[in-house]
Length: 154
Image (cartoon, rainbow, N blue to C red; front, side, top):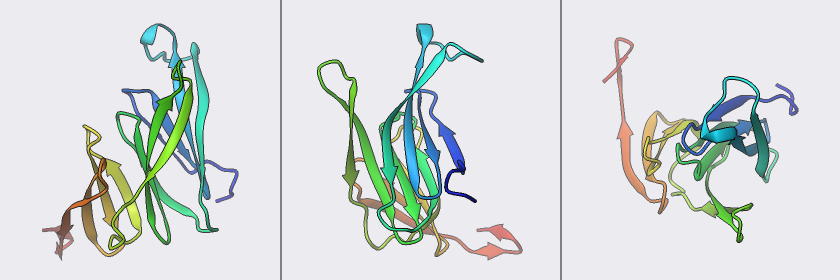
């Protein structure tokens, strides 16, 4: 997959923020719609509010954005990263990205997803464990393991 090719796109239907994942960066977009309704075609514009680049030359494996559009996360082959997107300025037209710390004992992820209320980040680690992290504090809440019995997770 080339670095100019988009690998994956997630869409949040509440705050209308979306994330596009390339091999070494993420682009966070804010979708503006007319009359507050999501159109089926036309009438919408997007604005790039936060480009996030991987510091090293590692490729991004997975990414997720919450339904509130505020926290988002990604994982590369070395570690995972959690961020919070904030509006600032007098007209809420400026955006800032704040990095949150995640527990170091969690390995890199194969898949990430936020809970519907955006309070938890679920991380499927490469070690066959599922980690539940508080998206606000970055603290590990649960570490779940599973076994396969005749091809079924138990």
